[in-house]
Length: 212
Image (cartoon, rainbow, N blue to C red; front, side):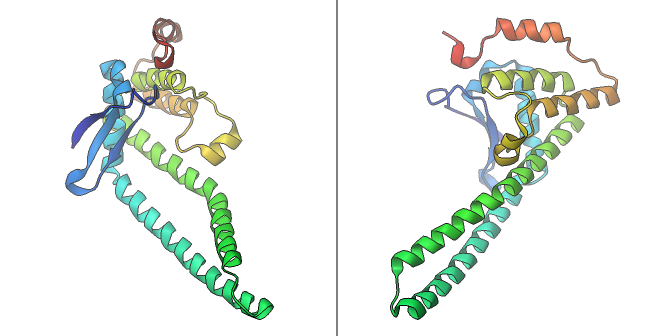
């Protein structure tokens, strides 16, 4: 699986990575902002993305999107037909504006209602990738340092509010991912980074948006 770097620093200081493509076009894409991080952290990010690859998450996401679009198409078709019937019964002629308004309203309501479910499924997929990445050799100590640094660089709290996670949390909170890494280290009998050392490293390395 190829690893390529995207020129993202001209648009944002955020740090991110992802698996894209299907079949021969599949690759891991790293934002160039990530290259400022230590090699151990870059390898941890790549390990997480390779876990997505092993779990076939891209294919699953494509199938889920296709199923969602099919549901929306069926609902729109049914709404369109019902609105035309109501227009004929109530006014004697079609009201295209009313039909379109009703259709858009139905799609909007469906999107709002589905949002928590979509975010829950996304967090579930990310958690599975975290577990697999730790199982295939990503060091828990590196995950802890990485999640703390991502929280600073991306301006994300380690413990986001519950409502924000419910509606907008596509990934588990950094605190949850750190706790998972700590449990893995306990099972493996590995060493954990010292909190003082982490704080000193973060103080010596300002976030990307605050660098001269």
